[in-house]
Amino acid sequence: MRSSREIIEKTEKYGAHNYHPKEVVFETASGARVTDPEGRQYFDMLSAYSALNFGHLHPEIVEAVKKQLDLVSLTSRAFHNDLLCDFYEALCNLTGREKVLPMNTGAEAVETALKTARRWGNFVKGVEDGKQEIIVCNNNFHGRTITVISMSSDPSCRRGFGPFTPGFINIDYGNIEQLKAAITPNTVAFLMEPIQGEAGIIVPPAGFMKEASEICKANNVLLIADEVQTGFARTGRMFASEWEGVEPDIYVLGKALGGGIMPVSAIACNADIMDVYEPGSHGSTFGGNPLACAVSITAMEILVRDNYPKMAEEKGNYFMAKLREIKNPDIKEIRGKGLLIGVEFHVTAEKYVKALIANGVLAKETHEKTIRFAPPITISYEEIDEAMEGIRKALGK
Ligand SMILES: *Cc1c(COP(=O)(O)O)cnc(C)c1O
Image (cartoon, rainbow, N blue to C red):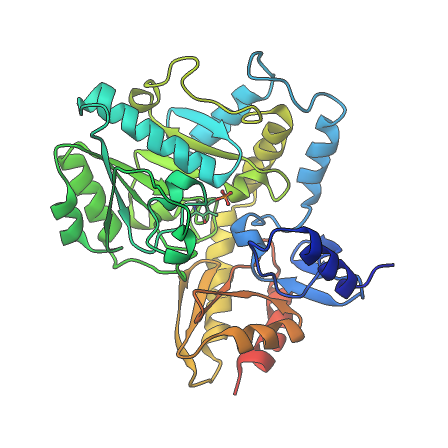
């Protein structure tokens, strides 16, 4: 049997060093629990950045995969498959939008939303092609493709990767005055995360998204909500936009949409927007494949049937209250919604992350000073209590 050390060394030897993983190897996992090759057990408090809302290997989703693997896994979009229509319907029902366009990764869904907004701007709003402008927020995270990093304000994401895609205007997240000032006759969309995940669980001022949506409406500008991380119950609502009573023009979805098993992403919007596409204008080889549909349909059924939003809200409140009991002057703020929780420190969080891992709790710092706690929504109260023992040892003073 190979040790964690051997596996890590081989990984480092042959792989690009575009990640700097913590020195824990997942060998098996189930629900919120992970085991490494040495048999050490951990709680997964990162959940693959919310892709694992259903926990590791949810039995019903695994069953759906196994069943589908006896039928058909991949067609091509040159032909129909018998599950894509059900995937569309389920996602339309969840989002309250009329149409869906499937892709695979979050970044592709973001790209799709940008293309949709630009075309809508040209075809419907009448902005001259090539002049479309999209307003985005500082400290955003929308993925890693060239166009997506063209919106980034983080130098480490951009250094050496130019030239960038033009047409983006950055404003400060949560700043309504800057949003108003940035809108021109060529503005086609405003793209935002309802809560900024990678930036460190940044919750905008109450009312910001609501006001932003009204400003967008008044100026014939599309509101695009990137709910790749916040969607599918993570924050205690099906979509985090609901906290503000906002119905975005375009939902960007990914991560948990794949049930923790497949990369599945999509945008959802109404027909007057989605109808800018004609055959040949956009697509993806794997987007909407039957295996992905089987996974995603099952995941969406479970979300609704088991009321994941309520679970995330109640467990989040419980977990957050326990975290707030920790006495440590290094802790600056504990914030978030549902089971998307950030603990910000006055100091760099690295030593605390080390201590958490040593005590059986897998978490990682984001932007140096904030640790994200985002366990699977399926985590039990007993498991939260058990994880809290390790968290208290690691973070308490
Ligand atoms: C993770 C993430 C993405 C990108 O998703 P990938 O599947 O990694 O391409 C986009 N937007 C947000 C808000 C994310 O958290």
